[in-house]
Length: 417
Image (cartoon, rainbow, N blue to C red; front, top):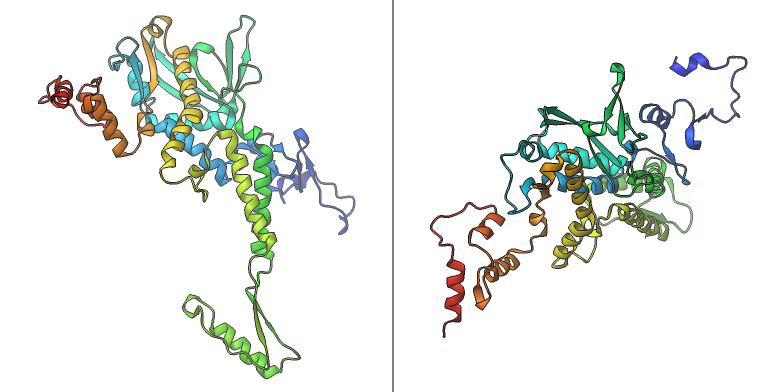
C-alpha cells in the first residue's frame, strides 16, 4: 500500500468509467492522480509553474530541457572559468597581499574550487534569480564563502531598510543572518529591488511547450507506427508469394543489407514513404522553441548548436556580442556585489574586483598579431604597449632580455628612409 492509500475512502469500489483521481496544488497545479511523478516533484521542490500547455515547470524539470541546460551551462561556466581578480584601482595591479584575493581567485572554501563555487552561484542566480553564500570571518578577515541553497533562504527588509536572511537549516532549525553575513548575487531584473527574478519562471510557457512537444515525440516513438515503405498489389496476393516476400524482408534488415534490390511478385509495385509536411512542421516548431527559450538568457543561435549560416568569420563577432550583452551584466552584478558585501568602505576606495574577459574577446591569431604589432609600434604607429604586456595577455612569462623600448625602436626603424 502506498502512503496515500491510508487516506482513501473505501465506501465503494472505484468505477471503471470514473476519471482518475486528481490532486490539487497551489497556483492551480493539477496532477494526474496521487502516483503522478509531478506530484512528487511538487512535494520535494515546492510549487511549480503551471503553463497553458498543461506542463508543470519547476527549476529541476527545466534543467532537463537541453536548451535551458545549454544556456545555463554557457553562462555559468563562463563566470566560473574566467579569472576574478582583486586589484588596486590606481595602477590596476593585482592585490595578492589582500586576504580576499585568495578567496575569490583560488579557494573560496575548504571543499570547492573557485570554478565550482562561481559556477554553482551563477547557476542558482540564473535558475532561481538569487544566489547566496555565508561569509565566514575571523575578525575582519574573510576566510570562506559557503554557498546556501536558494530555496532555503527568505529575504526580508527591516524597518531600517537593511536586509535580513532567514535560512532554513532543516533539522537544525532556522537561523536569521544579517546582511553583513551574506554574499548575495541577484539577477538584475527585480520586482521589489531585493530579490532577483527567476529566468526559468519567466520563460515557463516556452519551456512547458517544449516539454509537451518532447513528450509527444517520445510517445510517437514508443507507441506510434512508423512505416518505411509499402508494397502495392493490383489484386489478391497468394499465400505462397506472401510467405516468400515476408522471408525476403526479414533477410534484408540491418545495415549490412542496405540498398539491396528486391524481387516483387504478381505485378506488385514498391512505394516509399518520406517525411510528411506534418513531420517537417514539428521539426521547425522545435527550432522555434529553442530560440524562444534561449531569448531570455541572451544566448545567440550558433552557441546553441543550431544549423545556422553564421558560422565562420562571423562567429567571432557573435562571441563578442555574447560577452558584451549577455555576460557583461552578470560580471557587473558580481563585481558590485563583491564591493557591497565583501569589502569595507575603506577597502572599496582602494580595491575593486574585476573579471578578465580578454580570453573570450580575443579574435583569430592573425587579428591578435596585427593588434599587438600596432601596439608595439609596427608600421609607423605610435607604440602604446610594453613588450611584456602582449606576453601577459597570451599567458606567457615575462622575458628579461627584451629592452623596455624595443617596440619604440622598431617603430623608429620603420620610419627611417
